[in-house]
Image (cartoon, rainbow, N blue to C red; front, side):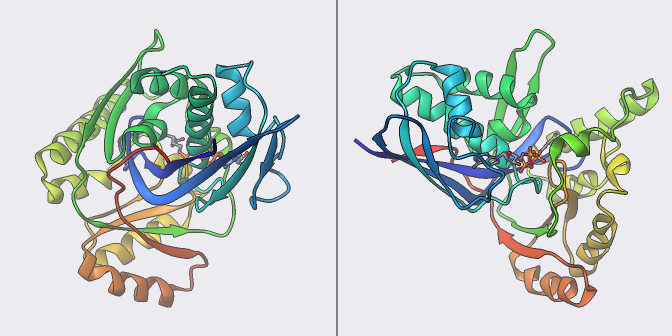
Amino acid sequence: MSFEIIVPATSANLGPGFDSIGIAVSRYLKVKVEASTASWQVEHQLGKDVPTDERNLIVKTALQIAPAIQPHHLIVDSEIPLARGLGSSSSAIIAGIELADHLAELNLSQLEKLQLATKIEGHPDNVAPAILGDLTVSTYTADQQVFSIKGHFPEMALMAFVPPTELLTTASRSVLPAKLNFSTAVKASSIGNTLVAALFAGDLKQAGQLMEQDQFHEQYRAHLVPHLAKLRTLGHQAGAIATYLSGAGPTTMTVIDLKSCQRFADLVAASGLSGELLQLKVERQGVVIR
Ligand SMILES: Nc1ncnc2c1ncn2[C@@H]1O[C@H](COP(=O)(O)OP(=O)(O)O)[C@@H](O)[C@H]1O
Ligand SMILES: N[C@@H](CCOP(=O)(O)O)C(=O)O
């Protein structure tokens, strides 16, 4: 019996929520699980660098969890651009966990899936909203336990500016400092804490101001994503509540009222920046199986 796994894209950090806050957004990875075969076959349009056999991240993840599952023919249809900061690897990992769960009849709970996914991805900010949907605030403790709380992100448009070039998360993490001094860490975490409080209180005005005051990562990545400062200025001109670096970049996310989207799009078009502007919304639901 064939089935389909549908996983949303995700946008992590929201500024100061580094490795912790994330939202699910309206782009999807769809994996159709067809007949069993002699060896794994993954049909996709993602380019020659993405394997079509058991080395594919979806299959590799599934085999890590359930090594004895029978190979199948998978048809992958992805709307999530690779290595752009919209959580493509997390979506592939979640698809792999669902694949293992169904083929091996593991009956994993959401918390067990989140635990496995975080261990594989290394941080929970993308995998949590990909599983739970909407807004999530999570942490991965030193003893490898995940805690995650789901909230409601306000009904705003999300304008993702996706540059044409890839930026691997590993490359974008390699420019981050190994340590922060105590007073910077205190300031940075107080900004993140207050952002979470503002989001859960539905105070968009304060949330927007705090989203633009990250002190954990954006300044260290600025040279990799020079368009961020420009898009933030254009966002202010269009009346956006905030623009932040989506995940590890290079995509930037502008949180804006629906009625101001066209003005923002016109400003971006006139700016000469090269990239695609996607109008997204928050996806309230996490991964689904059909
Ligand atoms: N659908 C997929 N199937 C297989 N591998 C994938 C898929 N999506 C992403 N990947 C792998 O994840 C890599 C991108 O991961 P990463 O650098 O973390 O960027 P992103 O911000 O998109 O998650 C791709 O280069 C590819 O190796
Ligand atoms: N917190 C991580 C998030 C990476 O997200 P991705 O969508 O770029 O994979 C980071 O900022 O490195």
